[in-house]
Length: 235
Image (cartoon, rainbow, N blue to C red; front, side, top):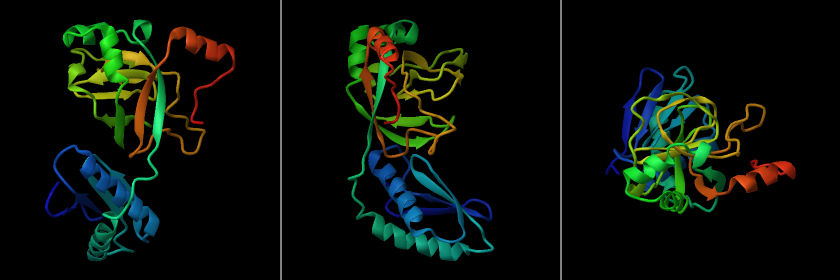
């Protein structure tokens, strides 16, 4: 965490508000609270807000809002966001089938870390992961908090296509692919829960500040839910 927030101009119509130079829940909380404060104020002239792990990029219309006015408003918001509470935290449960055809790399992950497959599942599903930010593809959450015990490098050769719902590990990160896409993460499982649906509002399930909890389920349980008409959805 910086002692003083940095305000970095980004061209003639954007500024980056940077709170620190690392990945930490404390820094990211300031990022999310700043976004919340800007949303609440609804300041005329602001046309975009892009949160990251440690900063917020604010895009504005210089014909409506002067740079100096924006910076002064941000500084006033900073005094308020320290008082924000975290009572609205959501925990999103992700039903996950681990291993087998659903997670073809889980045995490699286990062997790489001198663990059993059961250990990998237990460790991976025993943590609530903070969603720091969204990106890469629609609805893809950058999750923090994975145990070092299951850290595993990316694939040397990325796969051309990974199915939506695949749960992967790459280095210190874990995540879920919301749509079919290329990728180089080690796949350890798959979830039937949809993270992205362009026909819904909002179209993505996760948002920054949520926590993700992976809940192991078996293939039989999954198939039974389909037969019974049960659906893993946002509700």
